[in-house]
Image (tube, rainbow, N blue to C red; front, side):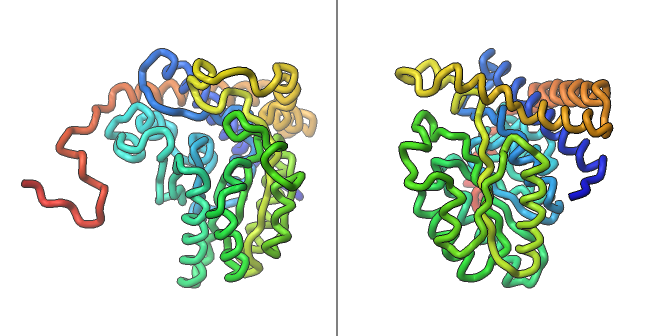
Length: 329
């Protein structure tokens, strides 16, 4: 598949944006600038970036608790994302949602949820809306290997197949559900093997390769727009950091070896993408380094934006919770 230079460089830019955003989140969270759960996407960038590069702004995505990478991959603003993590009014959800609830309907980001697998029915509902309204948008949902065992996911896949809905299921198989190994909790070798039970294509893709994820998603989007129904894509990937910030201080014992982590670090998705661009003469080393530097600067500006944004007022507590505002006493 021929992919133009602008698209390839956009993938690199968004992967570096996610990486530098997450590195800064780890830094400021460790410094106590904000509290609460945060789940780094470091190591998995190619899955979301490759998949979202195949979508239009009018297409929808929904994510999960590892939630920062998905909206950034879709083109979301890092300043509004950072402000949301800080609990400030200029955040995506006016500071009320936090790390696991980043949404921007204007570019198709339906949001994320900390409830395992709960975004999957939401994405299927969006796809149903597309079909009922005879509109051309598709819906794509990210979920992990842990969520692949949730009943809501299987019900959603079954319904999507019965109704031939324009939805794409993307499993980010990073090998562990918190600290529980995929190998000990799933009866099939790959999550994508389960697609046959719902009469849809199941693709096993190298999740460290943004181009491979892009190409797989392009075909899934084509099928969805043509009315051929859903696709299950499994991106085999790995998270380089802990499941969530602070988990290492409270968990008991090790659940993966340093050798395993280092083996996967040798397949860093950004390095893989950069090496390909340089080898094919698409970009120079200097151009790749410039993208890294540019995204670092943008993330620094995002932190300043978040720090300077005010906290919500107490009187704002019940705003945006219901369709009809509650009358104030």
